[in-house]
Each structure stands twice: as C-alpha cells, then as structure tokens.
Length: 406
Length: 145
Image (cartoon, rainbow over all chains, first blue to last red; front, top):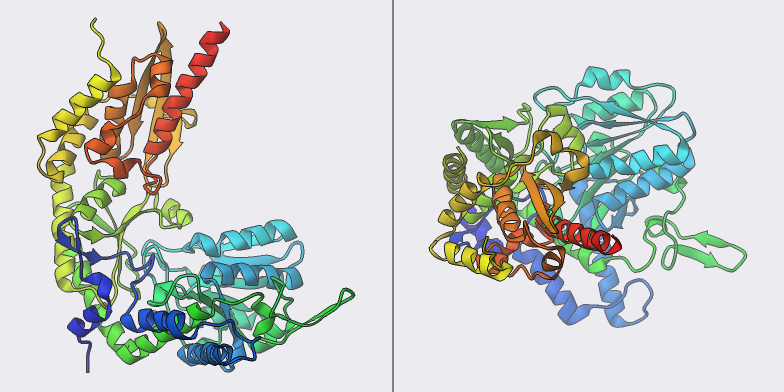
C-alpha cells in the first residue's frame, strides 16, 4: 500500500507555512512532533461540546467524558499490546513516568549498597531521577558504555549485574543519535538475574511501534507530544503484579478508596497512580494519535522513514567537513552531526534562516557528548511527513554554512 | 580625544547595518566583526570569566582604568562573538553610570533582538547583565573610596 505523502502532509496543517520567506522544513521531531487534524479536532470538540470532569459526576456529560477517557486507555493498551487496561497509567509525560517509578520502586525495593543500571546514551531524564534515588538510598549507579558507533556494549552490560542489582533503566531509542537498543535481548538478560527493567520509549513508540508483552518489559514509559499527540500527557505502563505491590506516589483525590483522619485506603489500579484530576482531554488526544499511527500503518511509516534515513545519510556524508555521529546498524531517522571548525550554534542559526528547524546543543545528553569529546551537535530528526526534497534543502543550507564560516 | 556618546555609537551601528538588504549580508558582517574583538587572552578563559549559555559560551573580563571600564570578551560561537563585539564597542571605555543607565536599543533596530532573548540560551543576555553588574560593582567601589 505504501505511504501517501501528500495525504500525510495535508493531515498536519502546521507544515504548510513559510518561515523566513522559505517553506518550513520541520526537522525537530525528536523534541516534539506536530499534530494531525484527527488529534486537534477531537480535543477541540471536547472543549466545545462535552467537557466535564470524570469519574465523579452523576450527570450526562461527565459520563460521556469518563467513557471516552477509559476508551482512550483501552486504545493505548492495544497500541502497546499490554494485557490489561489498568496497566496503563496516564502521567504528564516520560519524565514524570520515570520519576514515579524511581520513587515508588526505589522506596520499596532499593537499600543502601544496592545497584541500578543505566546507560551512557540516556537522556538526562533517565539519569537524574536514578542519581537522586541513589543519593537518597546510598545506592550505586552502574553505567553501560557505548562503542564508537553509538551502540551499547552488551558484554559490558552483562558484567554489570550483581546480587545487588535492583533495576535496569534503559532507553529504547537514543534521542541524541537515534540508536535503537536491543531492549528485548537486554530484558531477557536482566530477567535471568531476576532484575526488572524500565524502558524509556519516548523516541520509540512513534517510529518502531512497541509490543510490551513481546519485549516482556516491566515498565515502559512514553510521551504524547513526541508521538503526534498533545503535550502534558504520557503513559507509564507497568506489569500488574509489579504495580500492585508499589506504594502510591502522589496522593489526593481520585486515587483513594476510604479516607478518614485515622487511615486512608487506596483505590485499585490504575487510579491508585492517578491522583487528582487527570489530563483526560490529553489522554483522549493521545489515543487519537495512536489511532492515527495505526491507520497510517507503522510498517508504512517504518519503510518510509528508513528511506529518508538512507537517503539523508548518503547525501549528508557527501558534504565536506561534515561528521555524522551515531552510525549504529539499527537506528531511526536522526542525523546528528558536526562541521569542521564550525560551532553547532552558528550552523543552526544559518540553517534556521533557510526555513529549516533543527536543534543544536547537547540534546540533554551531556554524558554522551563527553564520551565523544564534543560540545554539541546539529540534530535533524526526521519523521514520515518529511521528504527527500527537504533533505536536499538541508544539504544546501549546510553547504552555505561551510562557505560562510570557512 | 573627542568622546562619542553611547547614543551616537548605537546610531552609527544602526546606520552601518542599514545598508544590508538581507540577513545573509548581515550575518557575514557579524562574522567579520567577530575578528575585530579585543581578544581575551587564552589564560583569561577561565571559569571566573565564563558566562555559560546552554548553546554557546561567552567569556567576559572587566578592568577599571581612570574611572572607565574596559571590557574584554570572547565566545566559542562566531555569530555570538560578532554580537559580543558590538556590545563591547558600545559599552567599553565608559563610566560606570553610563553603562548602568544605557538602553541598548540598537540590538532591536538592527534586527538581532532574537539573539538577546531569554529563549536563546547563548549567554548574550547574561553577558549584558554581567556588564551592568560590573558597572554597579565598580561604582559602589569608587563611592566607598
């Protein structure tokens, strides 16, 4: 069937605009993706027609919205192939999901001298919560190194396990360079040592799709806004048997069963972890985004993005003085590069003037930058609404940068 | 030496930039300007003079001489450095009170305002703040004496 690029681009109204007198080429998708009409319209409609707080009301609109929100949970459950709807916890995003697990799991299971495994290629949001946990509990952070291609060194990973290892937290896809980590294999290894695994899927669900049961992930977290959904909403998936054992994180309304001043008992999953009024409109928007991805077809998306990756890698590497970082055999369509003698910020400013949105800097992955001894890169992260023509325009802009600064 | 007011220097810069029709010439000129900056000694590129932006780094050193403050600065990014050189041109060799009271309107008028916005974490906004802080500190010091 394939992907109809014209149809796709029409689904995203924001793409059709002029920036600095040039057609916009939006290459900052690893930071956030644009939203299809399907998502925008459903959220608009709720605000205009049906908005009401969920779960508490006896009235018509509240019922309607509650049903829609719980349908959204079901849609997300199917999207990642979880077993139960109540294994889907709505959060404010990936960062919140990781912090929640670091707190709840850490409080219950991590003791002084215990160890937590992360990797050298993590986003700061999958480093700092674990670092803080280690400080609180006097535990130790163990780091899986990467090789020159930007791939995790799996032999070293296996060597990090000990009887004190309590949890592994690793990214599915690296935000800085796009490496797809072999998380299924890594989870199998961890489970051999009886250790659960949290997977940061912020850069994965929208590109590779995910089947949490096939991976056998214990926790899987991701954000709505990076998968064409709204901001301020995300998902924490956890296996029922693990979530059931964890203490709640934030407390308040909605998550309690009985409250008296002597004792409070907590509601069951998933409500135990959704204190306060959840971002229900965000949740419904996120589910609409998941449906959009399924309608478009993740296989179509993968094939199309693979073509962009191959085309872009070839074109960019032909440019003199350009060095691509992250040449893993298995990666998504992210181009992270530096130019000889040119500061990434200078390059980014000029590229912007050509109507092309890229990100420059360390991409919240300073340990990765240190590993390669660089101060930052220019990152162009492409998705299925980008085109080969846009890549050509990026190459022209980069050539211009080279001329200006050399 | 006849002294130009800060206003005069700013107006001159605005006039210089007025000849550029498009952004490309403007940025090329900034690149040229970056080479005119009184270079900060490598040995002075140390943490105490560093203004860390998330995107680019700026170093700024100030010295008081005959009641006037001289600024020496550098940046690791060229365009940032070009703008730094403009700021130094306007504010260096001035009395503290002039620096404190200055409204740097030229940045907006030459179309580089975005570079001094808090959303661009390039160190320039902090640099202007730091220049004014130096001026305040020297002013307080001279009053004490």
